[in-house]
Amino acid sequence: MRLALDVESAARLDGVRRLGASRIRPLGLEADRLGRPVPPEDPYFAALLALGLGRTRWNPEAGKPKAAPAVGTSRFTLLLAEEQAYWDRGVAVAAPGPGLGEPPVLSMGTDEQKRRFLGPFLAPDRPRWGSFAMTEPGAGSDVAAIRTRAKADGDHYVLDGEKSFAANASRADWIVVWATVDPSLGRGGHRAFVVERGTPGLGDFKIEKKMGLKAYESTSFTLRGCRVPAANLLGGEGHYGARAGFKGALASFNATRPMIAAMAVGIGRAALDAALVFAQEHGRLDDARVRDRLERSARKLRMARLLSLRAAFLADHQRPNLVEASMAKAVAPAVAYEAASLGMELLGAVGARGDHLIEKLFRDVKAMDIVEGTGQIQRVVMARQLVNLPREAGG
Ligand SMILES: Cc1cc2nc3c(=O)[nH]c(=O)nc-3n(C[C@H](O)[C@H](O)[C@H](O)COP(=O)(O)OP(=O)(O)OC[C@H]3O[C@@H](n4cnc5c(N)ncnc54)[C@H](O)[C@@H]3O)c2cc1C
Image 1 (cartoon, rainbow, N blue to C red):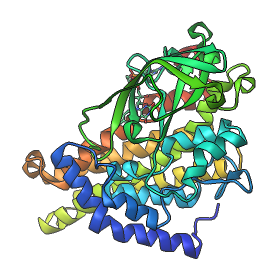
Image 2: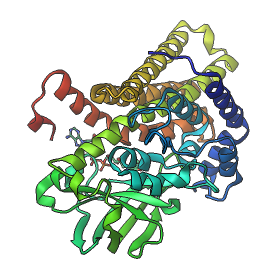
Image 3: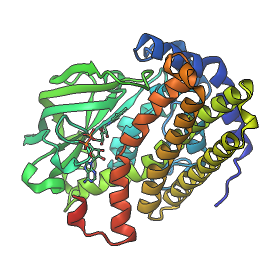
Image 4: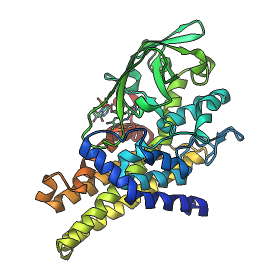
């Protein structure tokens, strides 16, 4: 597994690092103070486009992602995600791009669908977003329980249901919406539709209240008699054999879980750096127990980064990474949480005031365990693979 970056990627990463202190962190702190996401028209997003970011990894010539042959997350994308999250994970997710909507289009979409939906992200003329909506008020970890219905009607499908917590949904050009053609089929009934902005019946966008990560919107919305062209069913109906929809969702998760892990490492590093500064300024580094805890936290964060890189490396080389993606996702948020907790302990009463960076990171880091499958769900996945836990025991 090669860890070094090529010169061009290293330079782009440096560019983001420079933006971090001057733009990303201040934007995140402001959004946290105001309790609202960074608005889509903020000039920061246009600045990202000028840096060559906010684009798709799809390469129309190869018909495959540029940096990776499968739906993988290239080393650069991962390190970029970590670096952005170091400065502010909320601002990182608010950044333009096809986002979590990209992996299902890449893994399940026809060439024509990739051209239609990812084409505008090749050299975007303005900040554009994609979104991914699986979760519903009654279906989170148990994705088989989704109730958004899709009924075929001529050359359209009619979608009815509710979605929640979809990142960037209200500003997105399109949302990959997961629905079922028959709830009694469980995962076998799942279909993924690209629902375009402005489609009649798509509406009631409501930005959820969150304890942290306030710089990006997590949005609920409804689909009421929402007529979506059959051409927007990812892969077409022929794609959906037994559990193919579920496999498509899984392929997405295997690509995005290492990314979430990398972002958790970024938040953890930020908390640890701030804790170190506080400990230094308050003479706490004379205490061997404090030094030991700081070292342990730094070591675990490095370990988590390696796990996420390994999971991405396997996906990039089209090798199975189910266990590695879950392992990275289970481990990284936990060690990042540990780093933020350590910071809070060192702060003492200062942390309780609610105006220190570590206190914000402590609130931000919580969601990292929840998104893209909770830590418990990752442990269920790993147990099935590593110690043959029977399927019934994990739901
Ligand atoms: C900030 C944020 C951003 C998000 N972004 C998106 C997004 O862009 N798109 C999207 O579709 N969704 C998104 N989500 C939703 C997220 O994927 C769900 O919250 C997550 O899957 C958990 O579902 P739930 O909240 O319904 O919890 P539940 O599934 O109700 O789980 C509650 C608790 O029970 C545990 N549990 C549940 N089942 C089991 C089991 N079988 N074994 C052991 N423990 C179990 C869980 O680990 C958890 O601790 C986001 C959520 C948050 C907080």
